[in-house]
Image (cartoon, rainbow, N blue to C red; front, side, top):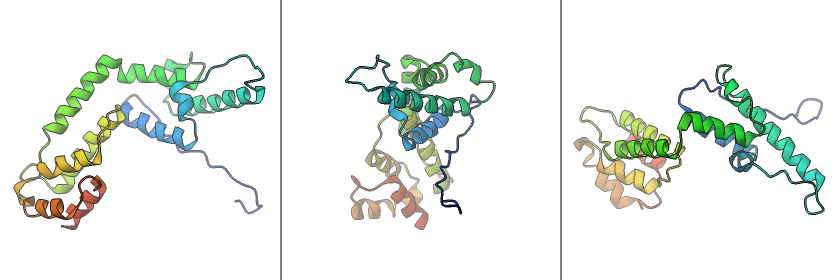
Length: 198
C-alpha cells in the first residue's frame, strides 16, 4: 500500500538474456511466469476460437491480454542482439519455443546434453583436498542444469550420491547421517547444513 492507500503492483525483476547460459535464464523465467500464473500459457499456448456461447468473449479477451503480458516479459528479458530472433512471434508460446529451439536445440541435441550431464553426475567425486563447500557447489550446479533440461532427479538420489562420493575425511560423518536420518525424506539442503555444521 502506498501512503495514499492505493495498491501498488510490483513488476517482477527480469534478468536480461544475452545468449549465454540459456538453461539458467529459462529456469528463472519459468519461475517468474509461474509466479504470474502465465506458465501454462507460455508452455502450451492457447487456442483462439471464434467466440461462442461456450467460450465467452471476456475469456478470449483475458487470454489475449495475458498472452500479450507474457510475450512482453519475454521481449523485455532479451538483449537487443537477441531480440530480433523473436520479432516474428505472435504469441508468448511461439517466442518461447523459438528461443528454446535455438538455444537448447532439438530433442536429439537435448538428449546428448542430458547424457553428458548424467555422466558428469555419475562420475562426480570429491577431491582429497577439495572443500565440502566447493564440492557441494559442483553438485548443485550439475543438478540445476539437469533439472533445467527437464530431468527429474529426486533429493534421495542426490543425497545418496553425495554421501557415496565424499572424500575419506568424511568417513566418520556419513554413517552418522545414514543412521540418524530417513534418506527418503532428507533434503539436499538439510544435508548441506549438516556438513557445514561439521
